[in-house]
Length: 402
Image (cartoon, rainbow, N blue to C red):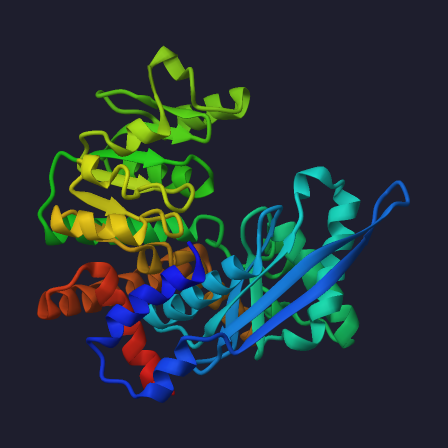
């Protein structure tokens, strides 16, 4: 998912939107790259220094917005790529934000809770001057959560001398987070799937879900309640298959006890690779990037792919899927529910007025459906994939801002 790969789709979009060279150059490079050494005193008195990053890709539509991930393999190329993607994602769903991303190169599983807190606060100390409710608004990402965001808000407020909840989203409800944030990504994707079902008059669907974390479970739960049959579910260790369908709640309970879905009711075991190639109507990758590649794109039998993971389909695989007329609802739209509800949280913090869950879902649904319709219209008019149509829509809005 390198940065150069991300620029390829932008080059394609330039062919459909009249922009001058200045715009091309502005959008092809990040505005600001920040790097810092993040110090941490361990519980045993040892002293460590970790690499920290924050990339603010573009703020022409508003303050930059994007998560902070703690991961042992994160690097500047990945953070830049994700900040670029956030810029276009916010434009696709018409939020008044630009794109940013951050992270620390660390394995948080090797840290105690106290060490994690000190590291989180240390990150804010290093980047305090460059973030703020009207500058750059972080959020949780891989291996970070509402607790870490709470520590970060507290540290930022101490350094600023004033309590500033709107500086970070994805906080706990007790610390002025938003209701509906925990399942927002899945809820947004669910609304997109309902639109696909309506648009293409889909019936008697069979669904396979790769990845059974927060996004995978919640998506399965929403679909199951609608009577949609989920025939396969997997996690990092593999998956289970049943032609009669699976109950997401039961699978989750089994996973909590056994740390994996494998072995659930002694059902047929399948690998993650096999799940992707199942003969189903809808495939929902919720795990890692680059799951559908040049190697397996030809073997995909699903007619529709709903991208909940970031970049689960490689650019080369995308071309093959397009030729096979497989419709891909792209990540840039499909998993935008999280950033949309983050926007709602920011609004609520700014106004100090808090919404109930029904209002959050209602506003989320309205945005998702409106932008899906816009993308579908562009796709049909210009005869492009939904992914390219989404980038065309985002590029038009960014071009207007510039």
